[in-house]
Length: 130
Image 1 (cartoon, rainbow, N blue to C red):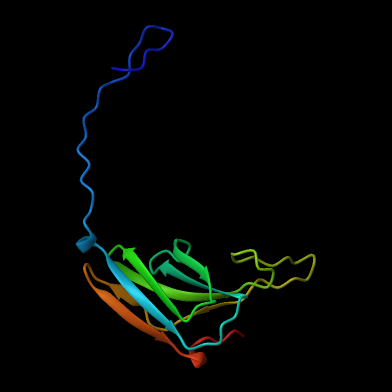
Image 2: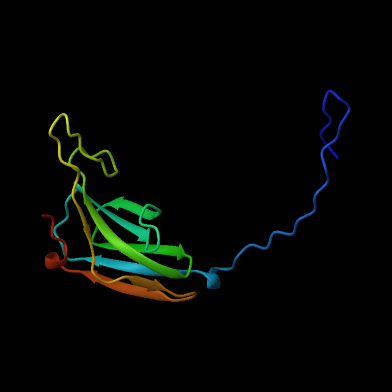
């Protein structure tokens, strides 16, 4: 016990073994961009079961992205047209007649395996904003 309260009570000792994961327990993806470099487009990797869980997010300003240390699982790649360049998606405003920022998902999911790297090439025709 290392913490004592003003009422002369102590915290409970707890022993727990933490085992860190190894590099072999994670996978990665390399994304090659053949789309034009646009500083208003954000590339995001999201969990395929919960699209609100953003795993990776960055502006589309490079030709190659190496994303490492992803837990094995299924992910989706999406693009956000960030009109105000605040780094995230903004919903619309009905009273101001402002539309939400556009989102585009790639059709295929990316399946990450442990100790495995996947190469994904993004073509211009795959990124279509309505």
